[in-house]
Structure formats: structure tokens, C-alpha cells
Image 1 (tube, rainbow, N blue to C red):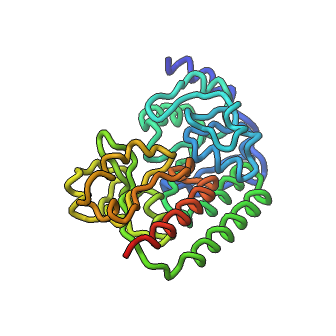
Image 2: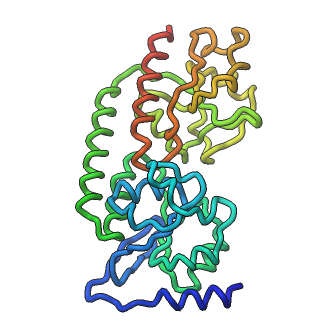
Image 3: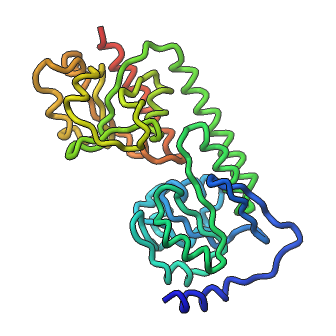
Length: 289
């Protein structure tokens, strides 16, 4: 199969332009392109969303599963997901750049693509404040700097507005539930934890380094959160927390599900969900004695 892919890769050879593009990716690697990338394969939903925000959406020729933001991304062919890539199909799209999620895209398969000479960019955005810089770098790679810079500026201004609005608010302890069976939450490496901090919340499992650690019910009870929260409107998954008075959050009426579908998406589309989170926490804050 690799020999067949190598034949496809020969089609990727182009003539270098006088001014090469140099961008350092999130793995610390210098990514060099002879000219702006106009055939891009994006292998993570957040990368796809950021490319669109950077003005490069029309250059995306392949995406990963669950690339649903913005809506236009749903029309692009899906060539893989977090567990498996269709290598032959990816190479058949003749990409001049492949953008991968550093901690999520299958590393062994990415390495096979790299050996074919296709430029690889590793992306890993873990903090809200990093999103504008990522947007600008994507614009550099695609030659859409003007649109990318404008989008990054808009995001920065909106984020600063939220930070100012909720600065100084009484901090409340929050257990953010990602899944109930097994019970999963967010650790320090997840952007949701960063969003909680911006909104005046204290993630009770911020001391855990994993992005989505599994925890025990007893551990949650021991840390006595003021608020138990989940996103996506899946209120039924929180039913067990509402029973009895052992949990402070239950006593305060602060077991809530919010409609924030992009809260786990580390890209520009996260902003409306962060605003929803902040407003929900502000309401919960009023119910804490």
C-alpha cells in the first residue's frame, strides 16, 4: 500500500516560489511551504473551524469526522477520525498541507504521510488565549493573513470583554461532568477548565493533568462542589446528583445542564458557548449562600 501511496505523492511535487512560508507549529517544528497552501486536509474538527475563521475554508479539501463547525464544513469529504485515517484517499486529494491534532490524530499513520513528503502541521490549542495566535498562523499558511488577523482581533476583543465582565466575581467550585458511565470530568489540560476559570469558576479537578480524567463519585462528594454542570443539554445524565442532600450543589439547586455545543471545541466557535457558561455560572453563583 505504501508503494501505491508513494506514486500518488509524486503528483504533489510543485515549483517552489521565490518566497517560502515558514511557520513554527505546536510541536516546535518549522513548517516550510514553497507557496500558500490551497489544498489542505484538516484532521481535527477544531482545526477545520479555525481554518474557516482564518479565511481558508475554501482551501479545505478533506476533513475528519465530526467537523461540523461552521456549517459549510459538513459538505467536505471526511477522510478519517481520531482512530483511523484513509491514507490512500488523503493522498489522492493531492494536499499541499496536512494539519493534524498533535495529541489526537493517529501518530503512526501521520508518520506514513510525512514520509511521502507531504508537509505536516501539528496543532494543539489548549487555552482560550491561544486561539487568536493559532488563527493567525493558519492564515499565514494559507496566504489569508488579512482575514485571519481580523478574525483573531475580533475573538480577542470578545474574550477580553467576557474576562472583564466576570473578573472579581465570587468564585464557585464546579464539577463539570463530561460523561456519566464511566464518570468523566475535565482536567487542567482541557480548555473547558480554562473557560471555567475565566467565568469565575474553580474546577474541582484542576489538579489533574489529563484532559478528560475518570473520577469516582466519592471523590466528587469529598470536594463538595457548589455547582455540578454538563453541556449539551443532557440533563438526564445529572439525575443521580440531584438525589439527597449530600452534595452542596444539590442543596443549592445548582445541578444544571447548559446548551453549549461548542464548549469542548478549542477553536473560534467556542466563544458563544463560553458566554453561555459564564451566564449559567453567574446564575448559580446567586444561589450559593
